[in-house]
Length: 82
Figure 1 (spheres, rainbow, N blue to C red):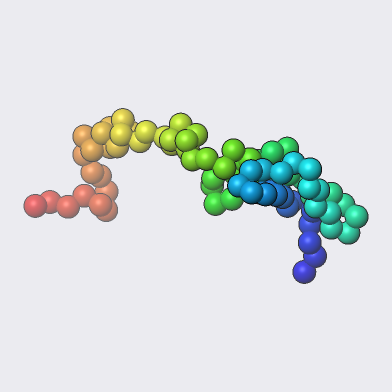
Figure 2 (figure 1 turned 30 degrees about the horizontal axis):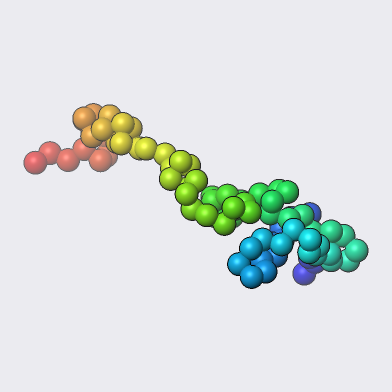
């Protein structure tokens, strides 16, 4: 397995604070810091803020779409008569 520095991100934390002076390298290639290039994993973006306060702004409100679907009659194979 080969390590790919371009696809990796680094984050150095010292005494509870982000340390931007530490640079990680692999095979003489520098790994980008999360503050320079945010990383996406499992559909979620990670940046250097280390907080979830922005997370609620990223959520999507599906209620209007679900209300539209709730009021539509079922058709085809999923339609069952009671």
